[in-house]
Length: 580
Image (cartoon, rainbow, N blue to C red; front, side, top):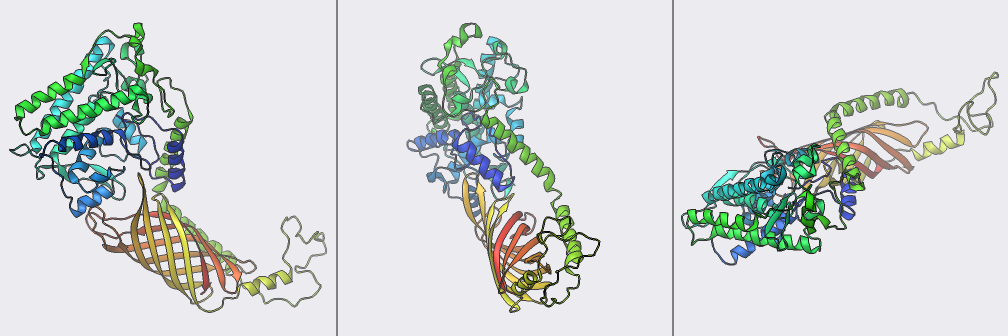
């Protein structure tokens, strides 16, 4: 069982900033955690991958499976960094997806609010070999281990339905599986049944090590830890057993107790998988062997209680440099950062549904503001003389230091106004533009080149070509994204006496997918729409302008149909326009 605390599709600054902070300093609690953020490979994945490699070295009943196009796209889009030798093997990847699912249940591993509900479910504690709410007092240890053992044997037995008559994995025996991937979000592919079920059984057996205190050799359980009562606020150590300890979850820590448990978890997972794939055993013998494996590693040794300090278990004294949540309930920096990330996600998600309304309001406000300020007639420049730029009534006090009465800003002189007008000369009606930027919410980069033609000072048309690579953050990966080609219409609101001008831009065209996505083949083509409700251009002089669009709402949709593919973005763009 793992508790992953991370942001969910919030701004790129919060995603990257908080993730980097948690990665480089402290991480939230995980229990033999699954991989998620920023190339974190996870513990369950490495334990399970080692087990499969060891079994394949001695038996031929679990061959590699070449993925289809859609399956290869799925593998490329998973939210963890898989082992290099598994990325082209559907069998190995399905086993890893199966072992991860006890913790995820098809939910985004970055969605901490949803995962809290999964990990706090009173009906699934047996999937993690940890106490349920009713597993109290000394008898609760055996009750928890019995429930865990029952789950492992039942789930491993169900996995045998995915084998053929010779005991070899049958790739045609498949079942629907809910999975969250980086680009598509939630998908439901059909994957090999054996690997999904045996992966879930292996997860529970592997969790049996960080969720228990053990004898010195690590083979027998002296105490089963508690998570459910701890988070429900009903925890009593004497009744419920020791609380879950984040320090035991760090499978790459060099503490000897952790390393002992990690090595035993690899052995246990290998023995369970080998029993399922042994071609010399019948179905009944395999099920019997499942019982042998679980008895070997999940047998209870009574005698340790709160009264004798749980036999002074070495697990209770394990410390490491990566602190997470602990039974003490202290609020450390990691917890605070995690709470801030969660609150940011809640606020963003609630506001996001109003994005279209906000955009419309901004657009209307921009138009009306521009009409009020920019459409007023501009008088020709007055001849330069020594009189004040603005006549002062006799009753008004004289301006001091060139400032208007009651104002802090200086009044522009006639000479300054003439210089601004010279810099705002429009030049050739044809122009060229280029810009770069990024997207928040769904991270991406953008590079644009385009042509412009000025119909009038207020209206510009043109064409733009964009490259929009997409970024997945778990692990951090730059995908080819889409190429777009769009027609552009710009409504400018030129300011008469200032180099700063306002603009609203609309882009409409097509987008082309540049890589395979699950359910969407490479080079799929669909519509593209983008709007910048309020942008700014700044006249540098000689028909050269800096253009800044702080909020561009973009929607490339390279595939339409029953399962459309779209990647909505809130972009910020900075560029330069010459002419036009």
